Length: 200
Image 1 (cartoon, helix red, strand yellow):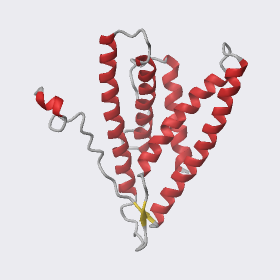
Image 2 (spheres, one colour):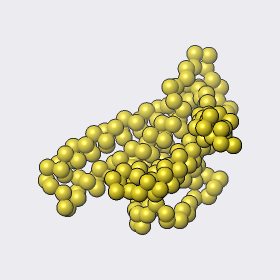
Image 3 (cartoon, rainbow, N blue to C red):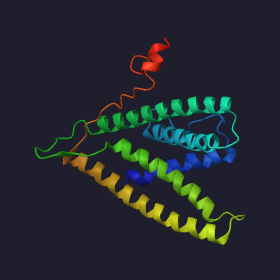
Image 4 (cartoon, helix red, strand yellow):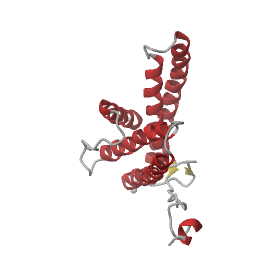
């Protein structure tokens, strides 16, 4: 199943990141750039680094100048994330381009890659909630609460994985079809963001 395949790659990325646990560490993709594994690994690495950016920026003692620099990094990361999702959807569009779409085929509320994006974030939630559920310096009450939350996340992972695999199966059989829209982010575009346009 594709969802399990993707989730394993996400976990590989998360575990690799946490060896150094440093947002400024160098990134090395172990997969060939022509393979879907390359895109999935890169996608999760972006999510993982951004997860920790979001932790850092919430430090109440962060200096304003440092927070501004970090905000810019988060903005750039969000754009990279969107770009990667669109690359992953391009992979699926190419993979299923020869499928004969049935006359009564329907469209899904989100593309495969945006569902996979949610799976990547879910992998991070599961990893960090599992850490909290087993944290030696936490209270028993804290660990029990986190274990209960972890069980919900694992159930969500099973449901989302099933939905992703069903969607891909439906696209492959022509029951559903892909229609992908570019996200058309406006806030990074100098022509569309009036603040940036005014500063040109």
